[in-house]
Amino acid sequence: MLFPQPESPEIHEERHPVDGACSHCGAASLATYRAADYQGWLRVVKCQDCLTTADRTRILAPAQGG
Ligand SMILES: [Zn+2]
Image (tube, rainbow, N blue to C red; front, side, top):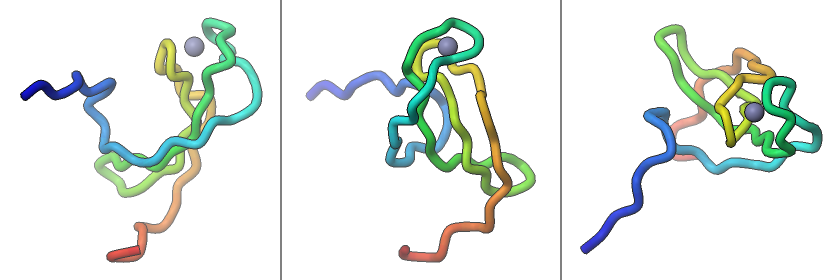
């Protein structure tokens, strides 16, 4: 049985497309999703082509089970 290669080592969250173009590579491939780092949770906007972070906002931890 084959599994697809993960696109990034980050926690997988549902990604929502964002209007706009990447400031680094110019691709209209921005998406927003939650990610976690050593300080807690963030909502990030990242280019899905080159993985440049366009924006990041510190958020509260997601509710358990929600
Ligand atoms: Zn890019």
